[in-house]
Structure formats: structure tokens, C-alpha cells
Amino acid sequence: MHSLPLFVRLAGRPVILLGEGETADAKRRLLERAGANVVGEDHPASLAIVAIEGETEAHDAVARLQARGVLVNAVDRPDLCDFTLPAIIDRDPLLIAVATGGASAGLAKAIRQRIEALLPAGIGRLAEALGLARGALRTRFPAPADRRAAIDAALVEGGPLDPLAEHDADAVARWLASADMLAETSLVTIRLASPDPDDLTLRTARLLGRADRVYHRPDVPPVILDRARADAVRIACETAPTDPGPGLSLDLCL
Image (cartoon, rainbow, N blue to C red; front, side):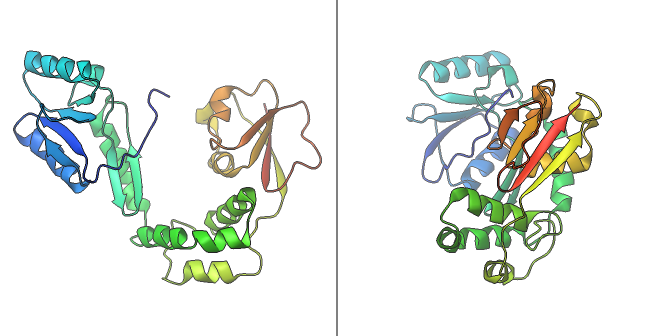
């Protein structure tokens, strides 16, 4: 992973913007949309965007800012960047960012457009409703693992809160009122076609994204295990246990 994706709250915070013209204007609109206070080079700030066309002038500006400890995005110059700006899908409060580390803004945009076409118009309202339900979920499921399992079970494809389906305003309330919100404990055995992650089936990729823990043979490569969600427990073993633990467990072998 070449970069760690972060979402930074910029409301009321100064961000330096250098440059003129269409590109600089577009970056200004983006910063202002995020609530940033756009300032000049002499203003104290932690972040800066350099949208200067001249090569020497741009390099000099980046060097001056980085010497002050400012993190810099240099437009169209990925080698000079401390951070890059992704293509963004904004379904407030849901944000989806697609980035290539500056390799190809066009590719990031094309992927963003494909993803955007899949999302229902009301997915932002679903995110808001889940946020408002956080207290009720904590009351019903004091253990974090149980809360996570309940939410995961609701959000699976075809589940009561499937994010790619349209929902009315009462969908989350109906789900909270349902008798059984937890997914059943299960162990799914998967025989991988190859050590290449590009050979993963859609079903396997989805299961990796949902699993609470992944039991795997020692020869299953890290590039496959990296497709599991970050907080899933990885356990190298020759045989998965008969009682794998609550929630969804996978048993991976080649």
C-alpha cells in the first residue's frame, strides 16, 4: 500500500493554495466545499496545494513549503507530493475516495463514475440513520464484536439494510426492532484457485470482506489475506477448529 487513506476535517482550517488559472480555481472550489480557509504562502498552515504550471517555480514553492514542515500536494507532479487528492463520491455523510497515488487521475475518475452509478440515491440517508442508531445499538449489544456482527449481517447483499438497495426512512428502525439481528456462527471452507488475488471469485472476495476471522494454510500468500477486512483476525493453521468462534469464519487453502 503506497499511501494511507485519511479523511481530514478542514472546516475553518487554513490551507495554502498557490497558482492561478483553471486548475487552481478547481482546487479552490474543492477546498471551500470542504470548509477550508484558503490562504496564501505566508500564512501558517499544515497543508498546501501547489497548482503552479511553471516547472522551476513549482519545484521552488514545494521546497519552501516542505522546509516549513507543510504537507504538500503538487498538481500533476506525484513525485513531489506528500499527499494526493482522490476522485470523490459525495453522498453526505458517505464519502468514497478512489486514488492511484497520482499515477492516473483519469483512471481514478473512470472508476469513481462506475461506482457512483451503482449507488442508490438514498444511501446518504441510510448512513445518517445508522449514525443516529449508534446509541441504541450500544444498548442492545454492549460488546463491540456483537455490534459489528449485527451490522455486518444487516448490510450483506440481500440483507435488511443492503446498501445497494433503496430503503425508506424507517428501514433502520424496523431492523432495530427485529427479533434476531445477529448473523449465525458459521465456518466457510474456500479452496483457492491460485495464489493470484485476481483469480478470486466474486463470492470469495465478498466473504473476505465480511469475515470476522480467517483461518488459512501457511502457503496462502499475504496478497490474498490482504483482501480480508483490516480488523479480521488471521490465523495460520493446518486445520481450522470445529468451533471457530462467533460470526463468520473462513478456512482458506490452496
